[in-house]
Image (cartoon, rainbow, N blue to C red; front, side):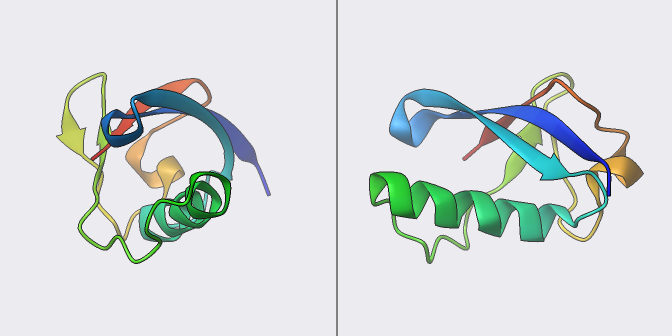
Length: 82
């Protein structure tokens, strides 16, 4: 399984975080994993279903059912989680 490194800016936490994620996992599953990690580290609510990931390069929302590979997102991508 190939993994990629992504940078995720989270305005609600006023910080940016690095994640290493499988490039063939759905955006929905990766997003849920990130939220669980942030919950355990920073206590943010882990029931956040209203969040979306955006590609900061072109400001598009990432489709939840697609994988990073399907969307052409590769190592070093900069994303926004709101």
